[in-house]
Every structure is written in structure tokens, then in C-alpha cells.
Image (tube, rainbow, N blue to C red; front, side, top):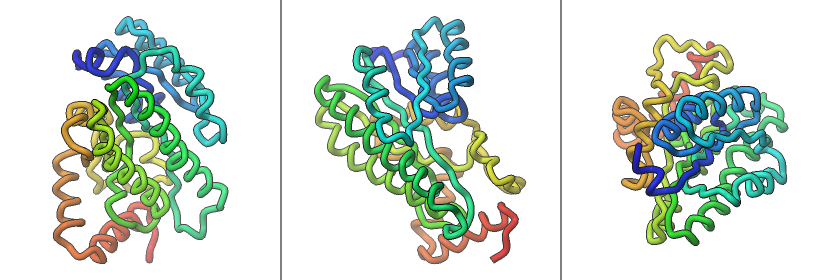
Length: 265
């Protein structure tokens, strides 16, 4: 971790950093001497984390209360960061909606697009331009293992995460001649607040710890375009997406999620 500050810069912008995987990234980077900019809609938890990291690691942690679904959110991000040596961006914030597609209100679908797709595009566009000019930088865009194929109950979430994965892999190739590292990160089930939405039955789920997901991603940044978190998840999704017919992969994951959320086909 100690080389992140010298390689990328003094500050890291982390969205959705008040909890879950984003929080784990903020803690690991602060431990390595990088000052995290904790962007989250939950300002109470963001400020609590800011205080903790400043006291524990003596870094210039900052908290930003920004709603990524707002049409002009990027202006607030630029104003808060343009004078800082931001060399690493980790876009972890996301909206997760669970249920059958037509049963979920359009407003929820629109908000998912705003946060998962539009904010990813705007953040990536602005900071890739900044990093290209400086000839250094790093970016981790959080996709999901669900991006690998369609699935019932999380069909729109998975589709938005497929967008993020495809964008990250393309940027990995385009930005590397400019000294910029990009990684599309695909966590599986992780012990974050989002996993408990909808009161799922997690008794059969393989659940990773946020710190393990974040640590593996930071170690992989600059080495490859994308990463499925955890060796067990990599094995399972190799079978689902490379060995089994696509139809069967979709059926297996959909059946699993239907049971997890106590639904019958």
C-alpha cells in the first residue's frame, strides 16, 4: 500500500465510501498514507469515517455529501477536488433494486440508471481527462459478478453493471499508453448493507468480507482489465459463463436468486 501515494497521488476519491466495499477502500488507502475523499449521500456516516481516519492515520480525509443521481452532481465533485492531487478514483456507489422488472416503479429504474450508468460515465470522462493530462492515475469502477449474465430479480442492476464492466475494460486499453491504470471490479456476494436488502435467505451464499475484496482489487490494479473477486467466485463464474451453455447459466443463477428471495417461478 505504501507505493500508492507515490504512484498515483496524495488523494483518492471514493464514492459510496461511508459503508461496505467503498469504506474498506478508504480504510486501506488511509492506512497507506493516501488521503481519502469520502463521497456518500449518507453524510453522518461519511463524517464519522472521516474523523476516524484522520485520527488513526493522520491523513487529510474529507467527507463530501453529494447525490450522484442529481443532474449537476459532477459540478460539485469538480469544485471539491480540482485543487487536490487526486490520482486515484474508486467508483463504488450504486443503486440496487431487487424484484421482477415490471413490478418495480419506473422511478426506481431511472434512479438506478442515473447512479449506476450516468454517474459512472461522467466520473470516468472527467477524471480520465485529468489523468491523461498528468500522465498518471488509477481508476477502479465497481461492476458486479452479476454483470456476467442476465438474471431474474436483479436484471436491471446486472445490466447496469455490465455497462460498467465493458466501459472499464475499454478504458483499460485506451488509457494505459497515458500511464493510467483502470480496473473493472466484479465482487460477488459481499458483507455490505446492500446484500441484506429484501431480506434474502443467505444460508447457502458464499459471502466475502469487504476488506478482502478491496485489498485484492488494489493489488490487481494496473495488471489486468477486470477482476472477479475471490478464487471461489472466479471458479464458479468460469463454469457458468465458459463451460455451460449461456441459457443454462442464466437458469442456474436465476433459480438461485428466486430461492434466495423466497420466490417461486
